Image 1 (tube, rainbow, N blue to C red):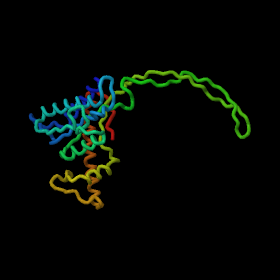
Image 2 (cartoon, helix red, strand yellow):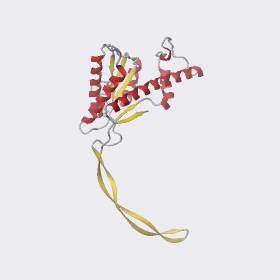
Image 3 (cartoon, rainbow, N blue to C red):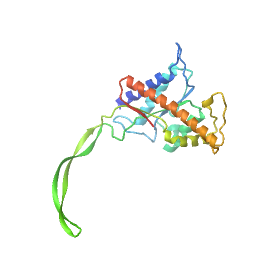
Image 4 (cartoon, rainbow, N blue to C red):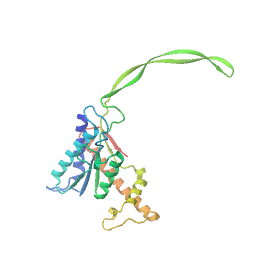
Length: 252
C-alpha cells in the first residue's frame, strides 16, 4: 500500500504539470474551478490493501494534491467531495454518495472533475492462492453409445495450492466512455444549467432535446468534452512514462 500512495501522488504531480502550468514567472491556472473526489469513504472502504484501504489512501493523496495546487495557484477554486473518512456529502448509502458527487460538480459549475482511486485489478493485495495441476492419471470406463458398450478414457487430476504474488504495477487514467454519450446527453437534459462552451461568446439555454437539431448539438457538446478529457488523460499517462513508471494506458 505504501507503493500505491507513491504511485497516486505521482499522478497528482503529473496532472499538476500538464494541466495547470501557464507561461511567465507567475503562472495562473487555466481552469477556474476544480473538483477533487477522493474515491469511496465511510461505509464504503473500497479495495482492501495490506495496511490500509482505498478510501483512506485516496483521501490522503487528494488532500496533498489540493494543497499543492492551492500553494501554486491561489486563484484556483478547489472543491472536495469529502475531506474526512465519510461517504461523500456524509450520505447514508453509496448511491446517495454518487449522486451527491454529480450534483456537487454540476451546481459548482466545475471546469474539471478528478477522482482518485486505487484499483484492485480483481486481485487481493499481496497475493492469492490458486489451484495448480500437479499430475493427471488416465483411467477408462465403459459407456453405452447407440446400444454398444465402449471404453472411454478420462483423467483424474491431482492439484496443489500455489501462492501467487501480486506483482501488478502501473497507472491508469479513466475517462467517460464514448459509448455512454447518450447517458451524458440525458444528464445534460435534466440540468437547468446553461451550456455553450463550444461557442464561448454565446449564452445558450438548454432547449427541447426532442428536437433532432438540438439533440445533434448536444451530441457535439458531449463529444467536445470527450476529446478534451481524452487529451488530458493522454498527457497524464505520458508524464507517467516520462518519469519511468509503467503506464497501463487511457481507458474508458
